[in-house]
Length: 367
Image 1: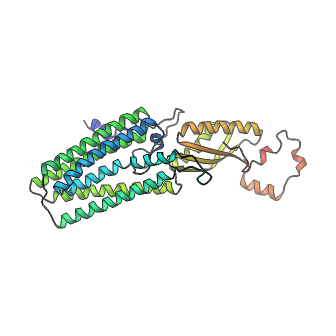
Image 2: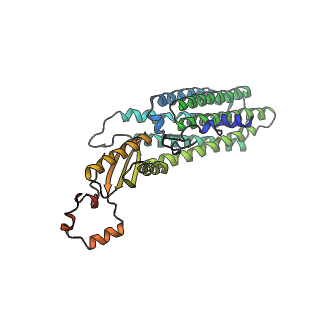
Image 3: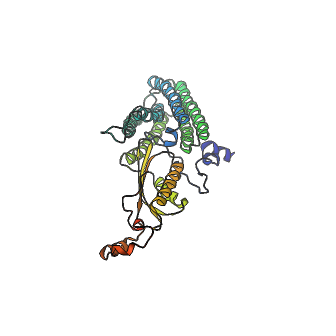
């Protein structure tokens, strides 16, 4: 029974079945586990037509649920239901940056916007976070006001029904997201599904508040509303951190580590260093310096870089561009010594590999 409940909430083996392997014998979980943020769309969802379809229908279902709840909020003046409605609206709003971003992403790059308009997704994400924050402040104010000035709650049956509707709407979205997430192998979409399931339990708390008021405890409604409001503030903090991190060219450390790790699977690569990655919308752009064996010819090094590029693209589907530059394999201290005491040019003349092994600098191959 306990195991079934944990699986249902996403904490069992089924909840972690996706996202732990890339087919090369090393376990990674680069999809972010059970993270849930508003305003930032995971690339494995955004780059898959099925994933976009799932997000759109999730928006429609949660929007319909929220509209029904809004009507009951107006009739009943329930703070708990107001907070839950705001919570559901916030979840539905996740799809807004995706739609906005795809409208602008269709536009080609220009001489002014050479990287395109992927940053529009970040701006939309900031707007969504700001709206959720404003709504949370309104819910918080209403909760405090009701605690200080209790008011009678009308239509308790309708409030309870609205809480049940909120649960059903979230559960439908949960099943939908989890099923599609498993189809497209997206751990992020699966995690979103389990989060929607937990949100459904939050909606059931509204039912508990209504029952409390019915039993003669009028503060039950604002107390439940306060708890839900705190959850919304938690979402605001988490989402704002994610949105502003990406806006400031921040990237999840596991992606940078994976790019370095990819070099270990390509023979001839000593290491991948100076990795620089950033998001533009739901696409990733990266640069790195690749240290190869000094004895390689330029054309041999070019083949290695091409293999590395293919490996990175395979393990990072969101990668839109990767620029790789050959770098010297000389230790910095040794390089400084050589620069202070340069070897006469004629000493290099007998080596069949010319000058390639000692000066790749920043003039390497670009893919």
